[in-house]
Image (cartoon, rainbow, N blue to C red):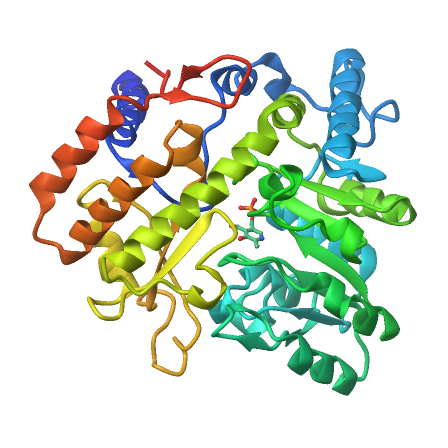
Amino acid sequence: MPSYETEFKSVVAKIRSHEKWFSESLPMIASENLASEPVRRVLSSDLGHRYAEGWPEERVYAGCRYIDQIELQAIALGKKLFKADHVDVRPVSGVNANLAVYSALSGPGDMLMALSVPNGGHISHGKKDFGGTAGLVHSLDVSYFAFDKESMNIDVDETKKRIAALPSLKLAMFGCSLFLFPHPVKELAQAIHDKGGTICYDAAHVAGLIAGGQFQDPLREGAQVMTFSTHKVLFGPQGGAIASTAELAEPLKKAVFPGTASNHHLHHVAAKAMVFAEFLQFGKRYAKDVVVNAQTLAERLAELGEKVLGEKGGYTKSHQVVLDVTGYADGGAIEKRLEDQNLICNREPIPGDLQAGRHYTNPGGIRLGVAELTRLGMGRSEMREVAELVHLGMQGAKKKEVVSRIKEMRKGFQKVKYSFRDSPAYSFG
Ligand SMILES: Cc1ncc(COP(=O)(O)O)c(C=O)c1O
């Protein structure tokens, strides 16, 4: 019998290498963040071995005495954080939460309105032809919001015309992945409701900004339901959640269980409860700092001559900054070039890509997120330096200089902030 201990240990070694690399890099993937160490420790607790299924106190399994208390606490904290009548912390991801909403509030063949992927939409709102969850998994018909490239936002007047021309509309999904400015939920709510549509807002990216009072407040603007990831600007464990009006609570609960999940991840539920508490305490300041950092980064990049999208609206009101990099190369090549210099970000489809013959592997854009750098304690002066490093990195010839400047800069930023006490960002050992 061969020994697989070397294989076993080599996984651990690779995690150590990963943590070392990230501790010397600038992680700017807009959908990522760092959880505090106490939250991370909960993910390796015994809760991760257990089954519950169903709603607290109505479980399918025994052994849930404390698990029920934790989940009820997570729900109560989530309701407070998002000022929602109903919160469900069981979805295991943002896509899983979206699928539960589709299942609760629509049927096959119904019409969903959302943003197209090249205009910033997410594939979970997409058509069947492109493998989108809405079309492929729930057989929804998908039509698109009109989009205005200048303002990098939904075009309200044109969208009203599109809504009026639809034979019916079951669900409108606001929110997206390339997300610079608040969506016009208030402006379109009446037209959608008049057509019989329910409004969902996908806050996967911006839930932390909403909770911190820095972006928009969809549940007060006409949305009846909001889905989100718990690990983007909201700096928790990977996972999903749903917040809604009381009226939609029962159908949504059924769609989560047994509809789209059997057991949910109980260690993640505990971590979500702790992150909601952290956010109630520190979220306002954090969300404000995130937006100021994104704006500072965007302004400096524009000063350096980079083509930053959204100029008309001041580049960004979120955690994201988006660059048109077609003057250098395609987004795929730039993503790789930057990664080689420890600038970790992702290529991004931008409006006009399809017309120019660009697609997902070689789109025209790069997306930079500042949520993680902010959680590490970086502020405006660091953002100006990050802009210079990205600018140098894009030109491609400065590998050694960029790598060593980042390593030096990161020496002062190895702790997770905005928590009850600072904790190490990389503690696997
Ligand atoms: C708008 C939007 N919705 C949903 C998701 C999926 O979230 P998750 O990765 O939690 O499934 C994303 C991912 O980045 C997203 O951008």
